[in-house]
Amino acid sequence: MAKARGFTILIATDGSEEGTAAVKGATTFPWPAGVRVRGVVVRSHVITSEVPEFVLADIERSLAGVATDAKKILARRWPDAEVRVIDGPTVDAIVGHADSGGASVIVLGSRGHGPIARLLLGSTSLGVVRRMKHAALVVRGSTRAVTRVALGFDGSPCARHALDRLTGLQAPKGGRVTIVRVLEQTRMPSLAALPSSARNVIAAQATAAGAVEEKRVARENDAAAATLRRAGWKVDVTVRKGAPLHELLAATERARAQLLVVGARGHSALERLLLGSVAEGALHRCPVSVMVVR
Image 1 (cartoon, rainbow, N blue to C red):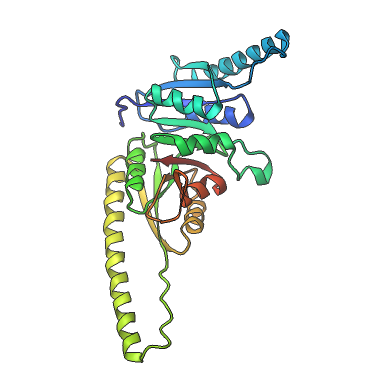
Image 2: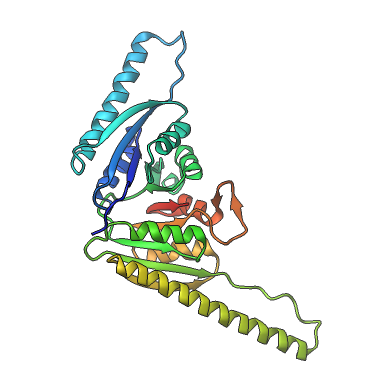
């Protein structure tokens, strides 16, 4: 059984459908035994002298009600869980509270509405994921227990941290991880102007380099799979060629995964702010919950 060593979860909610789903999803997630759980509701309104007292009182009652409801849900699994109302700009307050409390993972909802917007991430969720220190879980879709996981793995430091985070969870009965490795297809420059002998040499060199790369990838995949099996997971490995995000999402769907785990940055040179393009694309487009690990 996986044991938590100073493992703290911070769950942020605003009482919305998505925020409540994040709270419920946290209670069914395979966290390691002995985790500490805290919840926060952010008081982000601007108080001015023009706001009537009765309006402020209503806001306070609403915030307290959200915190109470969240605590009742969390108490089903963690009777000693606490939920507090905190002040500040929403993203700053959540990230700051997570940092000061030593949270290993921040859990929050996706803030999507409707069949199209459900595949888009809210500004608060994206802001938290971009600035979190360790890991963030964005809950989307069903809040049933997670038993099938897709792990986007490219051998980068963040991908290895994602692997470590996954092996630190409590593998559920029948839990299965599909390691997804995507190889970007290398485009050869135009060789038409070269003599056939030169083209043959370059093609042979490219083939040899590709074979070496595939062997390296296979070794890394095998090592990752062995690590997960030791942690109690059943493991499948799939290697795909093509555009990384497209292939990762397709493999996640094919594996019927309820969770996609990715590193915050990969080997790609395309990075956006503090997130890599694949991680941010997965957050926007993946129809299931996503955990991003830095």
